[in-house]
Length: 590
Image 1: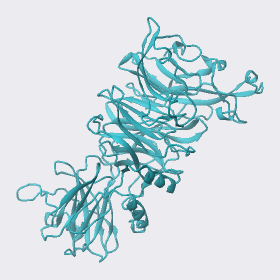
Image 2 (image 1 turned 30 degrees about the vertical axis):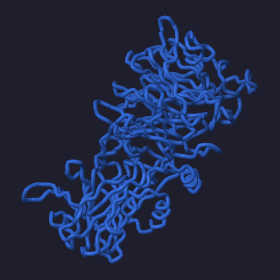
Image 3 (image 1 turned 60 degrees about the vertical axis):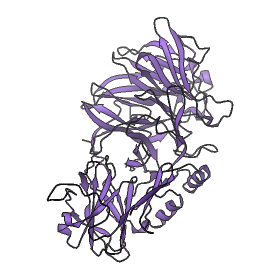
Image 4 (image 1 turned 180 degrees about the vertical axis):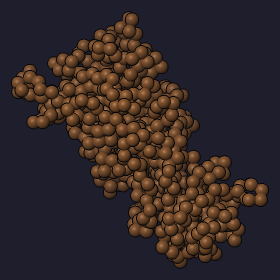
C-alpha cells in the first residue's frame, strides 16, 4: 500500500518499502539553509533537474496563508541565472513549482500575460542592459511558445526599446519606454557646455506594421532643473552617456488615449495628453499640483516605480521606493506599496492604503505592485528580491524571497515586477525524460519526467515494452504517479525487465496532454520515435485505470522530498542526463 505523510507544509513523501526518488525542492523555511544555498550559487539559489537543463528557482518562505492568497493559477516573473541564462518564468501559484522557463536570453526583467486581438500571449522584454536603462526588444509569445511578434523602437538613432515598460493595448499596439542621449548644456550642474543629457520617454508602435504612432520625451515637457538626481556616474554621466534627469520607468495608456507616466528622478507621476504630449496634471515632485489630504503621505513618494490607474482614473497605485538604499530598516522603513485616491476637479490627493514589508526591508531600486481581482495586493521588492502578497487591510499572506536580503546587492538578483494570472501552455515539443537504469532495463529503474511550459498536468503515466513501436498499447501501461513539481520521478520495482519506456502527461480528467519519445533504457537515450500514447483508458470499457501498480505487481513510486541535501545530490548525478533537451522557443521574428 502506498502511504503519504507531511514532511513540511508544502512537501510530501510517497514510498513503498524503501524505494525513494528525489523530486523538486521548491522552497525552504530555514533561512540559514537558504542563505547557504545562495552563497553556494553566487547569490542565485536554484536547483537543477535530471530531465532538463533549466535552472529552477528555490524560494525562502517566511509566511504563507494559502487560504487568504488570491486564487489565480500562475505567477509570472523574469529571472536571470548568469549571462545568457535569463528569461521569462511561470510558476504554479499553489506551490511555487516551476512551470515554464526560457533561459536563453541575455537579460529579462519581468514577464506578463497580456491579450492581443482577443487571444492570450506571454509578453516580455529581452536585450542588453546599461546602468539604469537598456536596449532590446518586446517579444510576444503565443500559447505554444512561438514568438509571434518582435517589436522595438523606431527612429532613435540606434536606441531600442527600454526594459522598464511593455504594455500591449486593446488597439493592437505596444507601448514601451525609451532612453537616448542628446546634446545639452550641462553647466548648471557642473558639467560641460557640450555635455549629454539622457532623455527618456516612450513610444507607441503598431504591432503588426511596426509603424510609430506616438512618441514622447521628458526633456520637451519637464525641466532638468527639477530633478532629484545628482550629476555623477551613478546617474548615467560618462563620456558616452548623458545625465539621466527624469528616468521614465512606467507608462500606461488610458481608455481615452492619454498616458500615465512615472518619472523616478523627478519624483513625479503625470498624466500626459495623447495628442500633443503636454502634462494634463502633475502629482508629486517639485511641481506637484495636488493638495495632500493625508499630511504628505499621498504626494510625498520618491524614486518610485510602476504607477497605474486602479478601477477608474480616481485611484492610482505605485511602488514607492522612497530612497536609494536597500536593506533592513528596523524602525526607519520607507519603501512601501502605495494606493492613493485623487480628485482632479478639486485637485486633492488622499492616502488609501500603504503596504510595508513585514520583515522591515527597504528597496532602493526597482519594484512593482499589482492589484488582484479579489482586492489583494501583490508586490515585488526590486533590489530586495522578495514578493509579498497582502490582503486589502494590509495583512501579509505570502512573504517569499528568491535571493538573500542584506549585505552586498548581487547583480541581476532582483524582483523587478511580479504578476499573478491565468495561462494555458501547450508546447510543441514533447515531454522529456531522464533515468537511472542499473540493469539496462526497467528493473529497479528510476525515471525523471518534465514538460517545460505545459500547464494542467495532474499526473504522469508510465509505459514499458520490449517493442518500441507498440509501447502505446494499454497492456504496456505500468501505472501513474502524481505531478510533484516541474520534474516528477518514479521508481520501478524489481520484477520488470522491459527495455523501452515512455511517459505521458495526464490532466485531472485522465486525458493525455502529450507523450514523450520512446527511450531505450540500456542507453538511456531516446530512439527518436514518438510514443503516440493517446489514452490510459481500458479499450474495452473506456474507464481510467488509476492504480499505481502494474498488472504484474511492480510498484511505481514517486516522492517530493523536502531537503536541500538532495539539490547537491541531484547536481552530482547530472552526468546521466539524456542529451535530448527541451526544444527552446524560436528567436526568429515572424
